[in-house]
Image (cartoon, rainbow over all chains, first blue to last red; front, side, top):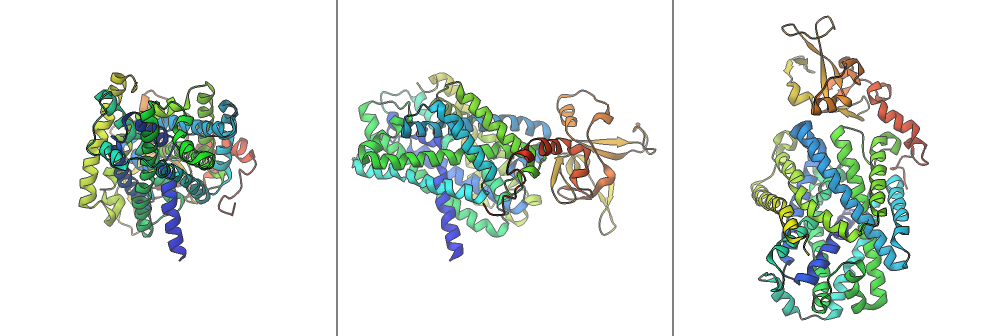
Length: 409
Length: 131
């Protein structure tokens, strides 16, 4: 019974933890411009993140080593160092976007100027990182994030023409008024949003934090294989809401208030309040994960002691790194940069950075020295190979598409 | 280079594969640093010379990494050392026989602990002991 509860908790956390500001913004933008025609990308992205998150969790559980330690051991200090710089920069961009997302949601709820919320949100993020136990931090944010199910409720209340939505989704094709390059640009962005690299750092380091062993592998697989696809459904619901309300009205999403407009229209103030709490929780949870990831990557590359399970004083450099990362994010936001624009940047550059983390994971998951009998099976490797190709193509295409389309405009 | 294993047989150790970029743990199993570079010494403990026998005298950390990545030289006496005598066991990680508190090479951690992190309220609290 206790075990069942633990499994259910893990699955629910994975669902609520799947959606972050990147998924929220990109899905709404895509829904409002391309209808349901990019849903296939969410499906591809969800399968991909399931594959790699379970692989990263397995590597951490079996070998007891987190991703970046292995990346350095395998690639040497030079290539791993370049990888660290790129990963850290993109992670920082994502952290900035998540903290920006918290402030936007709080602004929406309170109509207090978002810039006043920035220090409050950052302080709250740091306090949780400083004091709260890892398991509590992970589960509470994930469970509260489940409130985003309000988007699915809104979709049903809107009573859309389901046949029409399905026709937009299969077979997928860009709406006539949109340029194909813009379509593919958003396909890459959506893929980057679903497969953000920080999830892999967080997942593998989290497995070490929670002291997983090979006995926990089944739980790991279940959390990921059930939780992430259901989380992906929430993403699709966000896109569908935008496709039903915003697309016909010709509204192009550029703010959080437009993203939640369909919810307000369908469910009124009550549902809107529920969804806003969900957005705050989802972005807050993701801000914690990205801040932790910045500490994890740096500490694992340089061999420092790290982890929430240690007293902060026993992992001083790790905690200082996280404080610096949060302060940098605050600094970026204080320049009045639009958090929605930062989010769009962060998902595209996530797509660029994907091969940096996924290639080493795939290599190590095949190495019997680390994995013993738990090396990848044939099916896993076949899927891993296909995804390697997709990830590399998306990474190579991202920047040219961004330049060609003027970042999708 | 050779290392006498627990059963007394001689094991071959590849410096690049088994030493460089490996995690160093102290006697309590706490991470200290990653091996950034190695210092070689001659038979008399002086400088290692070509054509003479040489052995690993210390693990170098910190600035040694920047020197390896970007080139340049620094007097080895200035680089943070972990003496090879303190190494107890070579496994997937390198285990020391001394606690990290006594290591000069770990001074950044100690400095941040004493001056910053340890002084913030809750900095020395055990997170696992309930919240």
